[in-house]
Structure formats: C-alpha cells, structure tokens
Length: 65
Image 1 (cartoon, one colour):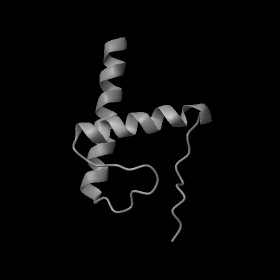
Image 2 (cartoon, helix red, strand yellow; image 1 turned 90 degrees about the horizontal axis):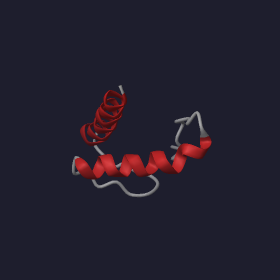
Image 3 (cartoon, helix red, strand yellow; image 1 turned 180 degrees about the vertical axis):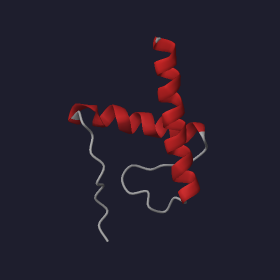
Image 4 (tube, one colour; image 1 turned 60 degrees about the horizontal axis):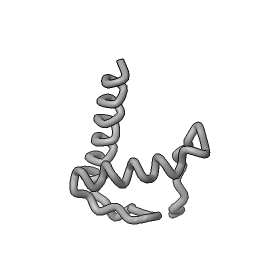
C-alpha cells in the first residue's frame, strides 16, 4: 500500500496554506493530526475534519457577500 496522496491541488503554491487550514480544522474538532501519514484515523475523524473545513469555507464565502 502506498502512502502517497492522490489529492491534487489546483494551485501548487497553496499546499502549505491548505495544510495549515486542515490542521486548524482538525484542532477545532478535537482530531489529532500529525504531519504526513494519518491513515490511522477513523472515517468519522477524517470526515469531521473535512466537514469542518467545508463549514469554514462556506462561512468565509458568506461573509464576503
């Protein structure tokens, strides 16, 4: 099994900002992410991080309207 991510970022320069954003979202929902491989997370934990990221992106967009 490979640990390389297949996720693609459209703007490569944004990788560091997205990683920081992901760590912040994980912290807010109480999931302990570490740099690199996080395959030991449950689906529920990983989903809660993704959901928090989407929630924050929607809030940001709504504020910009």
